[in-house]
Length: 219
Image (cartoon, rainbow, N blue to C red; front, side, top):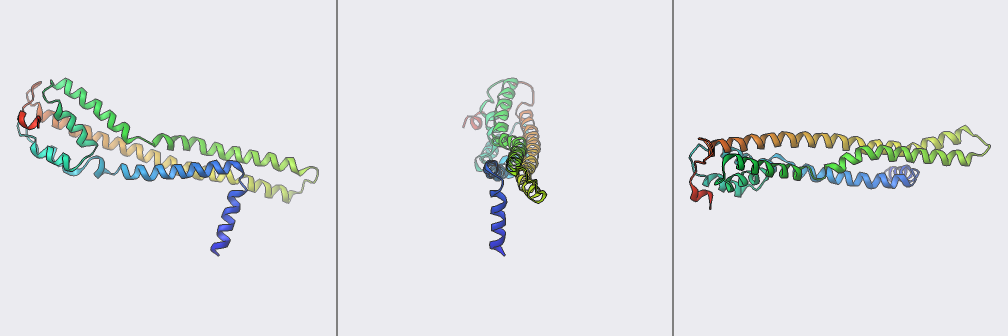
């Protein structure tokens, strides 16, 4: 039974022609990107709960020792954004905010790495499948000659549609994964923005000048 299954599967892909090779390669790349992004976009890796809790517990005027210790223990996108905020605490609030926003955009861009491949796969895979089908149909009709056997025609069309099936099978999961990851990044970006704004308000409770212990900040 397993041997027959593998034989049928091989025949299915073999009859798809050269476009099937491109679709198989595209599917491998897509699955690899999905697995890597799923691992990189875990919330505990991007927005660790310990760092978030340390920011929420911090009170205006408190030193940043506990927060910095927690950040070092939990390297993440959120920790790097907060580190930028702490590093520039000797700047006015508006300039510090601009530095934090720049760092946040950089971190979001890092989180989105690889998603463009899924976006391209979503558009290209169905087109490759359609090209494979059309190429197969052209070959079928070119070899029929004057016989016009309907059984042969039906079998040929069935085999030519293999690439369309595979193209859609590659595009659909890529589209789902792309939209899921984009939404997840958006939610985490909003959470990081909220935590950064909270910390900024606590570090600058009276306007443009920070209220923290300088020896802790410059450590």
